[in-house]
Image 1 (cartoon, helix red, strand yellow):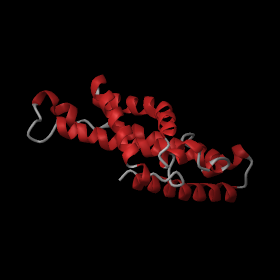
Image 2 (cartoon, helix red, strand yellow):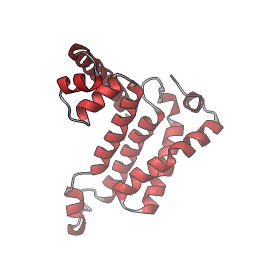
Image 3 (cartoon, helix red, strand yellow):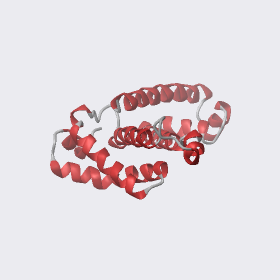
Image 4 (tube, one colour):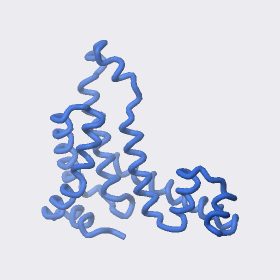
Length: 177
């Protein structure tokens, strides 16, 4: 199902841009701030993300990925551009070496947000079964006992759910490039 704002945004409706900005700017800003640790840079990234999104709206496909996932991808790339500018090979100093060497947790956080959205899009019962398997760390047999579903049905839901998630995630990553 495609929400009206996403379709209108893709079609270039200015009021849809306002709505998308109001709905998603705080998420974009939070991701940028967490990664960049600088409010001014995070504000710049937020603005750049929405300018890039508006200019490339013809590449947004709401049937392949939700708006939030698409914007997260643009945000990740924009943050990476800022990091490259900040910490280019010729500009790294010892004060920032440890910061650069640390794994960037923002990608992990973004991935968690994208996975959570993709899981929510699956809906029950696949969403419920996958959440029990991965977040609850239950075995297939434990899920069957907890839900009252036959073991084969649990396995089918997990297999189908993972396939749908994989398709959704691949579509999400492709739409960011």
